[in-house]
Length: 437
Ligand SMILES: Cc1cc2nc3c(=O)[nH]c(=O)nc-3n(C[C@H](O)[C@H](O)[C@H](O)COP(=O)(O)OP(=O)(O)OC[C@H]3O[C@@H](n4cnc5c(N)ncnc54)[C@H](O)[C@@H]3O)c2cc1C
Image (cartoon, rainbow, N blue to C red; front, side, top):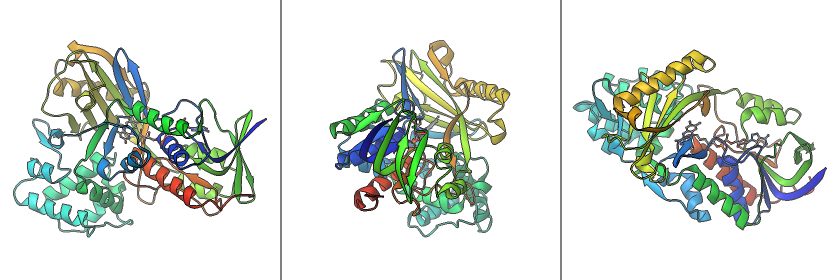
């Protein structure tokens, strides 16, 4: 078996693995990044007939306060951003549309709240932003609201925000502390959503560049199928033909893969507690159009259909050829629909109807459609009594975890970046833990 030795081995080449490998390499560590398939994981960009399709959508939330921005500055990543126009993000209300009140500007414009209710909601926003409204880990947001005297319109507004941003039609499953944490951050930001120009591939290439420029190795098509533990430390990870030894390991791979790899380690039972998630599966349906269809919104969400459309090319100028357009519809599946092909067909039909309603004439201009054949895992849902996987267990001191299933900050890819940043800092601050383990 071939053997190689590193300061840090990172298993998994999604955004979490790439960003931690880049961070450690930049700060002088000899790293190897091992990916079983292609770099990028769930974040990928596919170019077809001059249109760039991104899965998942490359929207970054609250970038001014994000870990990605921290890394961008520290590592000198070359990224160009286009920020959301807040007032163009709307709810579909049946016969009408309304601005989503995700910050003060949106709140003043929204039709969902009227008169005094705007002030009442502003009061909640202020208390949330100041950290006075914290929620309670033992109460769902639904229970938390029921226990307070809140006007029906404000109550409805809070429940709407909960279902929009927590991928759940069931506010009883969203812990109230998670809800308030999320909104504290959102209400504080002046740029709620931004897009990376050129899509995920630009970011992936930037992390790759930093790794390579700093002497790091990247191995694709390299699936780690076993590990070797010596006492309290992991000493090697292995493919069938190659063994990789290191002082530190970051596992940026999903919970079900972790369970397989760590089935004979001291953290087996710890992992079990954290890997029983309720994932959110979505169907997406992107369309590349030859000619732009103008509308007064660039994001539209229908709570009843559980579908939203984003005008990707409005924000990412490189996504479509000149004069063209890329629209992305994402539809949330209920738990009982995940394995039901009939429900998937119905979702696709609902997405087409939603396009018909908001981007009339799209079929005439269609250059290329790209719809998911089966549901894809978008996110892990934080339910009551369920928290993210810790990034470190003291019983295996040289092993760290990163990814959007881990404890971290924000939602979606920000969980990947924040957990990656945190574990990389820990490794840099702790050079003593493992030598001679
Ligand atoms: C439809 C959709 C829309 C989305 N929209 C957004 C959005 O707008 N904004 C946003 O921020 N996020 C969005 N997301 C979420 C975002 O894509 C993820 O949060 C992010 O890509 C997760 O990165 P990760 O590195 O944590 O995990 P992953 O991307 O899952 O990476 C894990 C990697 O580990 C590799 N791997 C697994 N097992 C092994 C092994 N044994 N050996 C070696 N390698 C292994 C996998 O191949 C994979 O590359 C969306 C996701 C989807 C699906």
